[in-house]
Length: 361
Image (tube, rainbow, N blue to C red; front, side, top):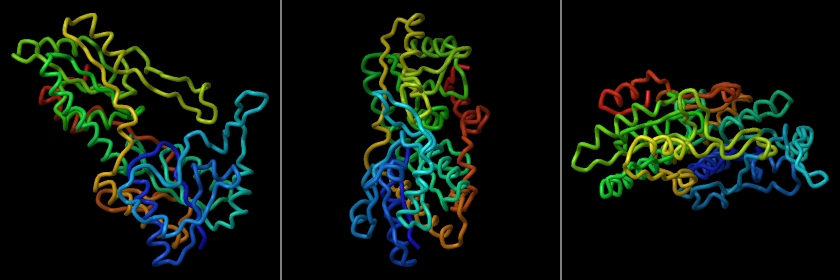
């Protein structure tokens, strides 16, 4: 069995741990051969972007962030960015990807990524490519699995940031706003906000009104140290308003999505009209995606990497591995086309509100 392995979309902690798990088990136990596809699906379109993936390449990569294969979120074969006459245009290069797959003599493809990467794998499978998937994203927004690897590390980094903001906010009696990633899902903001003891948590699933947040800040102002910590998801938006967009889709050929950003500043500008306290906005950005993965992410990524080989061995193509409860199980790859978001009535939201945390609703 000769398998291609690619990592697509944004990088996240745990990718190298998964690659290591795949190669070590696949080579040692199953005697499979592996080909590393570089920079996501770009390596299936562009020449000279594939190489043998051996045990030697996996040595020492377990604690490393990023991915030794490289990645890209602008290499969708169905909407591939090509420069013509000095301008970027999108072209359907799926035939090129399918031909490259055959030229590499691959018996199957292991695609590791979020909803975009796995959706592409599912569509390629419909065209005849044998593919299986492993879900990853720091946003934790894939419906097919209870949790993705990369999320635990990002959550820990966000929580540490909240902890650090507490000391400077308390010293200056300021309102500190921390903007975290997550796109249209508020899991990172919700979990890190509760874990870090934030006073206000703003997520996309609960459009906020500024008045309850102002009221919360005023109530805290009667304390000896009148600071307030607010955690905002990048996809959050005011009731009746829209999400803050840093860059439009048409400016990102081959990607097909908008780049969110500025939700923290939008909220800060609204609050500034109602309060006298100083407001500071911190955008955590790509710090959430970098660095060494936590033990939990290393374990989950390794489990995914080993389990996906069971799918290959058993011929369960067009499936991906997923965490359901305590078990890693196969689910249809088509599940990756669905997204998961925070339930506004979920237990964790209710408990946070019962402890006095405001969600601006």
